[in-house]
Length: 568
Ligand code: SF4
Image (cartoon, rainbow, N blue to C red; front, side, top):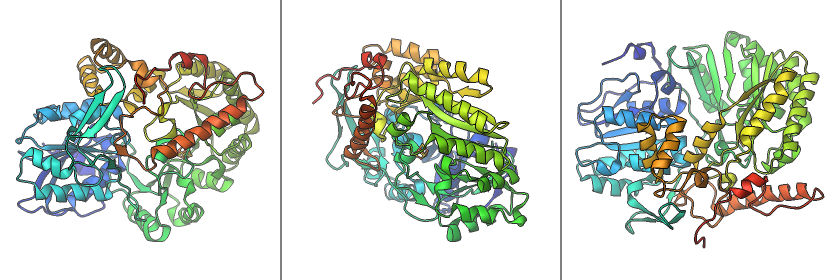
């Protein structure tokens, strides 16, 4: 079935006619078309495949697909959201492919996955995939296809062994994980044979041309948007931040050779432009780009900016955005407490945040959303009070500006210095406290669900024993209650929720991703964690008893500290 959804597409590249012997490949996004086609990563990988004559690529979404090959040899998934794993399993079943990698044989295609979720921690999903691509897709994908061509007619096992030799390609079934006890911590992770690399290194693309949309469509979730990646990673290195730590080093697209030509190409087919990246305004030539977009010939361009650093919100930026159809701005401040911002390495002061609000209003914006977190390690109720006080000050300093405080719960992420720290069970109460304090003062409060943060933490620190839990959860209906039911059913066979989510892990503990090397070695992450703790310790001096390392935070977290059996 070919859907009319595809008819609205305007392509910005020329697909090649595949050779007669081309590899039939399905490239799937485990969500609806409108979501998948708005993913820049998905667009770019699809276009890369469609421009190769040795591959015959067909797209698959949960609600539509292009004509699928009768027998595919490779099926790939681009994953941007953890909870889409349910759709991956559904799509595999719809293609009559076993969901467990171990149940596939030579007659089944190779199933690969890539994207930020799997690059951070693929382990909870490890048993569903034959191959996982770790890192930037630019070189990885081509290397995967070339290596596959060498072993196209070999047995599945030979194919997997060959693919495992490619840098950045992780074949989970070729690694054996041992546990101290069935429901305890990991004891060791070893390749099953000496030819398989003991450590897989995440791949980093170092070119100065970053991604830009390859297709524009009114059916995208961001209707008709043309997206340009301005920067990759972020140099700020906030200690909890996956967007920074996982993708280091910070890279910028060249203005002359990459950004301006890309923008000109895109603006020929649409007037909606999105500038993407973890820290767009950190681009060294951001001002020049703003001048370029301010040209009268772009008067009808609607501009969206993914992320703005607080101290770059000038009146000029606010003016340009207001003229280009942006009404409000989002800035991440994390907390109103200077102590907390020091702990997380957020180099920002309250007066800069207040000034950003004043500038936003002076430039003609009507709203400002500040984004923060509850339960940051080291946080106490006084820090929350400081957040409330800061919001009040902003309200007074920029009257009439619609103020929103969006707040999530701190969730530890793999490959960041805070990966060892658990979710604070007090965070839920803290979200309620903020709600109670901010609403009556006319500040809109938008909390993210605490319960879903718990699931995010589970998946972000999970090991491969969770594949079983995820499969059960899906069968039980994929609700929050389903996770609880699945944990109950697997009691004694896997660790409890507390181990994965709330416990502070010891630095000696073998992490589920210990064999997958991110941009920074563990020793550096530990140094950054120690720096955060020393800020915490110095902030406690004179305020009574100091808490022990690893037990900072509050009493509830101390009781959730998980004993690691036989930690060496
Ligand atoms: S400034 Fe934002 S993107 Fe950069 S490291 Fe901090 S939280 Fe991450």
